[in-house]
Length: 560
Image (cartoon, rainbow, N blue to C red; front, top):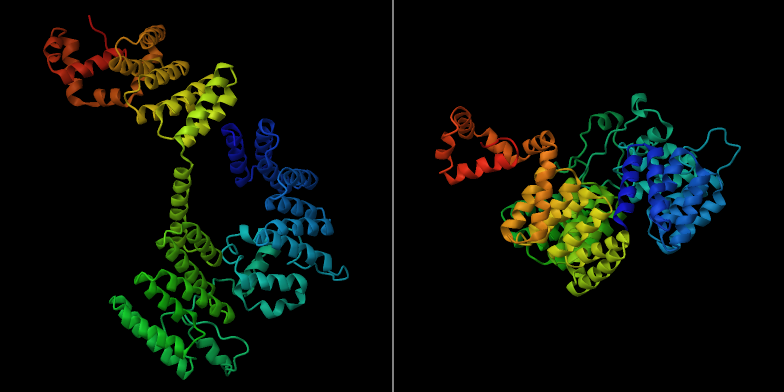
């Protein structure tokens, strides 16, 4: 994507996140003027129009995104949402289903489809509308801090799907605090203030017993005073076999802490034998395999643990931990793509900060690997030559495109940054040009052209004083460089034309600030003011002489 188009897209995204919808629409529209076939900008503008309530325009942009990129699921999501808002549910269903053909696992498309089907099946004779039906329900839950942490949990999504089809079943789910929180968000009222438990669910190390398990119900008094398991304390309602399994797990944990992995493994295996429906014992066993470097065994066992956990309604945080362990095992095997997939699956279950940090690290490694794989000096040279041809013809936007591609192909070639800096200058993008010139100098401090390029840009930015420093450096490296000499003279003349501006700019120079802020230098300058002859003695010191010369060149002091 062209850098200028990317800039407009980023401005639009920032405005939309800040709820500045009109600004977002304007930014996306500016980007489309430069790149009228950009499906991402149409998709983003569709979202902005929908947020503003202009559903016809949202639909138009969604359809354009689909037209430009028929395989892209996001376009169908935008189109389907706009149709749903317009209550054209059959058309919306068709859009979502078409999108799912291209990306069957896309959760946003699945949610939209379920919502539209629920709206179509809703009976108009019902006096109170189903709060769980209608367009944008899952997006609303994802964006609210009360519900965003569990909205992607598979069991919660199943509950939502049931409620969308049959709202009369709400009473059987209200004991689940997640449903209470969702209802609060969708109705716009605080059910917690009305006595409903909207707090977060406790994380239990032991899985919640399934409804089919025959266990005696506690009396009302004992249920009120019973302490809920925290994961570290043994639950009071375990069977004899489960009790033994718990004790084996505790022994395994002690051995694990002492890094006696073989002993830990024996205890965990025994715990699994005694209680095969508790996934915790399997994930602990997998942790031992991880420490032993048996990463494939660790992965296989975690998959089995997840399957057991799903079947027995294990806490979603335990499932998240198993997915994270799979991801970390793949990372140890240098399979970063699979590591990314399973760390992401872990975050979909439970957003743990340490897993998020690990995912970001993996994504950074993947990006670096992709960049390295993309490097090709020969193709960089080809792109540079194409850029040079267009630059000579005055096609600066076209040249910029090829220079940018050349930089991606060979990011350590200083000359490529110099060429692109010249292109940015022609396009009046001085800040970007200055950045490239400085990168050029950083890569090759002996490259004279880099300093000349930097000085020229600073001249264009009316910073003649800083420009002189760049030209000075160029002349240090190549004293007979005529271009640097001529530009240096122009910079000096510009300084003399506006000495006040030159002094102000000089005072912004960190090196000048350090000289003036040095107590010893201030004393020397005071002596020079009182006794001009004192300067001769001070100039004998090379360091002091260099500092005085710096202040003279900056126009801050004069010599008689």
